Length: 91
Image (tube, rainbow, N blue to C red; front, side, top):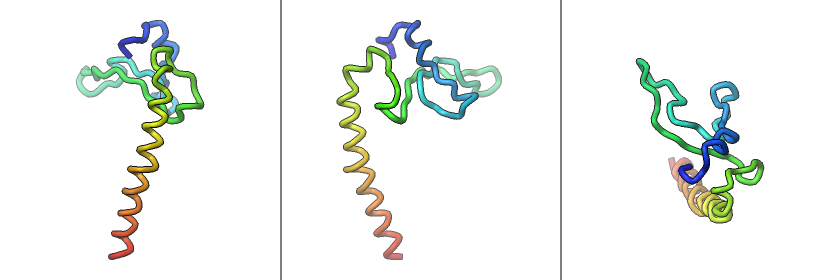
């Protein structure tokens, strides 16, 4: 998110504390860890790449992200599930 201006980041802030949905931008020090210590991670999360708008800096990369997600789902996850099912059946 270093290429996204602060004002644009604010437009994409997720409200996971209230909604339970972890999509959107999460600024640093969003989560309280313990004894006054807050997290130091800044991230942007989404579940459905085509159902929401994304920051301008990310938009050129969406086709690559979409292809990566497709590859992981169909070539990695399906293989893992297939092997797990085989292990369960063999028990």
